[in-house]
Image (cartoon, rainbow, N blue to C red; front, side, top):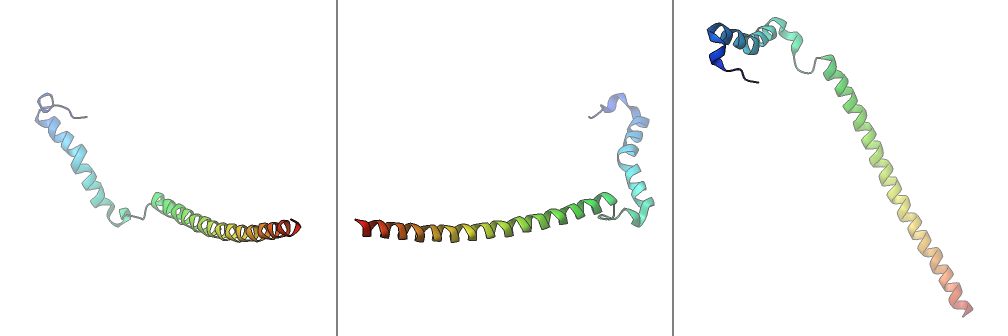
Length: 93
């Protein structure tokens, strides 16, 4: 939410600039190497979760492929069985 500059005055504008721009820059410089991207514990935990999700997705894809293959085999066997039944029915006629 923006605050109109007329109501702040020069000191208020400087204080707002410090709070918004300068203080985060100073903190980043002071922390130095400890704030590199990917080093925070949150990033590490999320990375581990992504690896877990990736393995689960790979396993689901493998299971899906196996299920598709099994479906095709069952369908082929079912056709063969039905053909045998129809052949026997034709012989009985």
